Length: 273
Image (cartoon, rainbow, N blue to C red):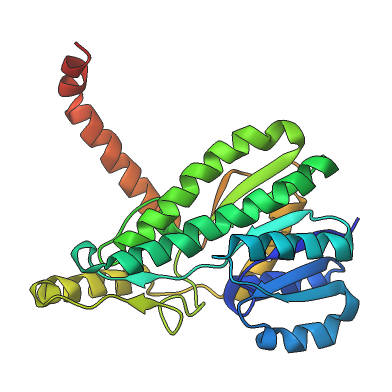
């Protein structure tokens, strides 16, 4: 059976690639973006199988309307992909209140609004799959993108709880945690805080470290097959890395955490009383 997808952030990157992957195999797609001009070629190529909707995921009422329109058009939603998001650069001291709130509005609340809107549809169907596009930055954390990391850690937290809450309804949840990919995440779509001179020396070090982490960025088109395999799996994972770098980063991070927790376990025991 063909599937009906609801995907946010389809103007480029993962969202566009996954929309095309689904359509090219005969699925139907509700493709949302802030500006649907970038989807004109997709609509022209796939006609009635695609519904392009202008959507700002920060607007909860607009999200609810878009999901209702998707159901009216296609009758169901089998796969919901929360891909809309952006990177906010800046040391923690540099981040303004407006920048912090905007990062959470899109990366956390936008995903929450879409998730809440599609769940009644999926519960009524007795099936569905929510794909949350997280990041290796939702597992680890790196200098100069701390508020972005915080937003992805929040996404990870509510999604893990969600997976347990909806399992009995036949709904699956998967957190996709990519490493560095050539998606323009760090380019024109990124936002940058006003820099403080005190961090200039460290900023250069952080930039070099980031360059090493994403020395060989992945090709977003190569994720088409893997994402289709995920949505077709009978028992998909709660978490999966995309790219070759994340496993090594996560392994080093978790080994360090376990070592530190064990090294200070005496205080943990004393604090119990």
